Length: 347
Image (cartoon, rainbow, N blue to C red; front, side, top):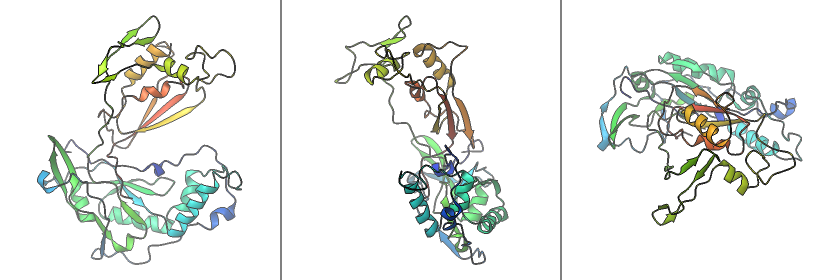
């Protein structure tokens, strides 16, 4: 991040508490894990503890190119909150019970608000941590109902002042990145409820998938026609399209599997599929794929809805190949949530 870059953040998946069925649990099942106040001492800026494991492995002295401008915007950051030991034990038991057919809690899912009330930090502790962040000059952006993270933003200078670590520029493999040079520190009084800070860096994951060789698309049959003598080294290549996959796995779908002639057809209609990614998606690629292989038209093509959660990561190579979720689910609705960030967490 120069002035045009932003530090990116990783919001752990527990931030997005899935709600498939909202059935309130009986009061006594939640009572045992109601949060208690755990910040019991005044905040002393001179009494600090380090949040270990928060330095990226590539933030090395040999790549260091000096401190970042103090005015550089951080983008969204997350302060990860931690449960008490009693809350963690209760949550572990609940997660087992909710999948146990013999338990009274079987499939009695929690809403995010119920989750936060049972397993999040207390109102008093939350107000104390928010107040400390604001006193350091940060802007509190959001506190999800699950109460497991506080999203905030500020500048590199405020990070250095509040967390006692500097943000430096690093040149790695021809790319400039920004990262903290040491583990951040927080007042010891906050340690009982703070698990860590999302990685204060913009090192992003690189996709490990490799584009294969090309095949010839037959518009008349809507199939790929491979060159069966095509090799990748000593490995022969055989291309598979959605209809091939549906046939191979005997999918109950007459649109894709010619061998399926009777019975209940499943095409994903009425189903929502959520995909979490770290890149924007080229929707035109999805459209072309569906037009080519699923028999849709430009007026009826079923396109995904893309939700940007936080700073827009843009197209960074991590978004292609998502159209393959349409193999057997051509009628489903897809929502892609993009999170700008390296795949690393402080907990």
